[in-house]
Image (tube, rainbow, N blue to C red):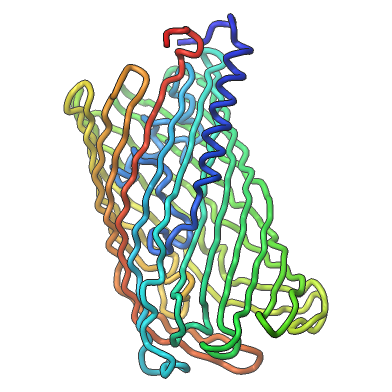
Amino acid sequence: MGISKTGMGRTLHQSLRIALIGGASTIALAAHVPAASAGGFSPKEQSTVFLGSAFAGSAAGGALSSMFWNSAAVGQFNGINSESSYSLILPDSEITATAGSTFLAAGANSGDIGDTAVLPASYFSYQLSNELVVGLSVNAPFGLVTDPGKVWAGSSFARESAIETYNINPTVAYRLAPWLTVGAGLQVEYFKAYLRQGFGSPAGPTAITKGDDWAVGYTLGVIVTPASGTTIGVGFRSSIDHELEDSFSISGVSNPVAISAGIETPEILTVSLRQQLTPDWALLGTFEWNNWSRVQELNVVCGEAGFPCPAAGATLTNLELGWHDGYFFSGGLEHNYSDQLTLRGGVAYEISPIQNPDERTIRVPDADRVWLTVGASYKYSEWTTIDFAYAHVFVEDSTTDRTEFVGASPRRLVGDVESSVDILSIGWRTKLDWLVSGNY
């Protein structure tokens, strides 16, 4: 349905207020994401609905949160709508150092390096005309936290690692034809990194690198309905080029010195299918490509002279990574059990951007993984639907073999990596047309 002009100014003000409140709650609750839950450091838990189907169908619409993967998806929704989700991530990730490690005598086992975290996401849409719909999403599309919390053989490679992002994505979608909708959006992203490691030896003083930056990117999308019951969605999220700036210091040894470090987030291309098999059953599928091959190294550059920086412009550290493209394949089913209850489930296989032991750092001990998920949606009222989802992620056992340098002195860590993660998610979807109709 369209929105009447009567009271539109007041209604739009109220709607934007709701969107901003939802966005503010997302920022307030945004947490670092355990490495075990993310391919590279890009968590997928941006929607309770699509977590339940292992993200099968995520770019083909059906829920407002589809706009994270495909900006055209917002064009499927009439009136005023909102959606929020909160995912509790419970990781279990350990590294056991083996023969060949430089500091094996300091202790072989890292303990659980992952922390429990909550990942929120919020979405909002407002229909301006029969053809034009605008939207807003607030997400944390990249994140990472690893924290062994004790002295062991890997402490000189990494102690605490924390990356957090806040992404605000205003979007517009236009219905070109009943079977074709296109969309585009602007990404405004804040990126913050805080990295600690033992300086010189596992029990040495702590070296702290930190930096942050605001930068912009874009999103594009298209949704096509070539036949009744068939929906195909293609969405694209651009790379965002961040130049992090802040300081490097060694606790109790040196004062902070200015540094900078460049990092480009990967492009993400998502292609999804939603195929209605019967009135009550739908088949879902997704293919996703992440251009993690952008991440080949991390250079920290001195902004000024001061120990340990010899001069402005000198390279302080150079972390070799050599990552590859990441790929994600998923399939799922959705069943309308009744007018109120919808059930869904899915399975996915994710190919990690980290394929070789010398690419696997303590900060990101990533590997290929299998997702098994289930979910449900309950229509509580005409205006509100509550969503639930659970996922277990089986991460392939892997190894690490890293050699890094402190000055001219090499240090090596060889080890076995074991990881898994459980995810619980709750969300709700609300139609806000009562703001216009007055039917409270």
